[in-house]
Image 1 (spheres, one colour):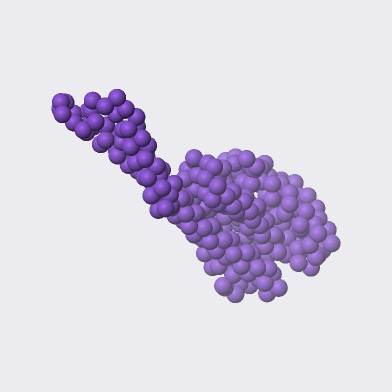
Image 2: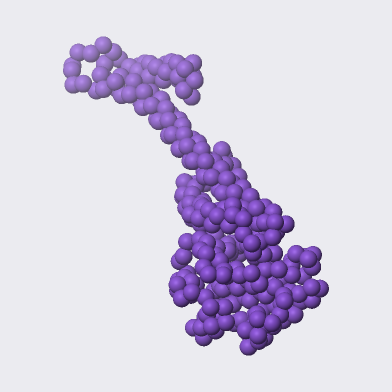
Length: 320
């Protein structure tokens, strides 16, 4: 499905797909074309109208492209990944968004409905007329919407890390290590996406381009700065998880040592009693006190005294 919007001085108009070619050559306005779930016919129409290189169309159809930026004759081809922020998902999911940026147009191509498309339209409607009447500000708004959607995901991950730290301190969850590895995988996936995306935007903002006005380049550098902070937050959260895993393993080791210490106390007490009963269990006829009527009670008292003595010793050592 192809939707097109024209941004002229003080006007915002919908452009029918069949009028794109005429509008591109005649109108003096910035054009945003959004293509959702493109069919081969849609891609063919884009190639004819905008003269896009066939390699870029292959990248659009391949949904496993790394974020990148490529310069072609008269336009830039940018691939970014938008994050899906649906509630209840343990890991973030990403959708590829291909962006064609020319002097008078921005074309976005993606699979499935993107929530930030409508948000971008609303932001452009509120933007100053002087800025939105050229395509560079359209590009900024699209990229800024994509980057801003990463913050709620990082907020969710931060909250999960806080809960993990509470679980580690309280020792209330048996699957804490599993949760840590789930979060580490999610952060690793985020890092693999954000790293190339940061480099692509950095390549765009470090150059002096005629198609990007200086006042808009300031906005694009701000998007790149947000992306840098996002990457730094991901790295910080990964370090926090490494520390949380170390604390968890130390806590497990301490609990195991506590169990072993208590088992040692029990084994020592019963070991002493076993020695006493073992001695008087030997088959000798002449043993001291063996024939006494109160021999049993004497041995019971001795074993009780030994048990009490060992308990006092272990308490003094703070083992119990």
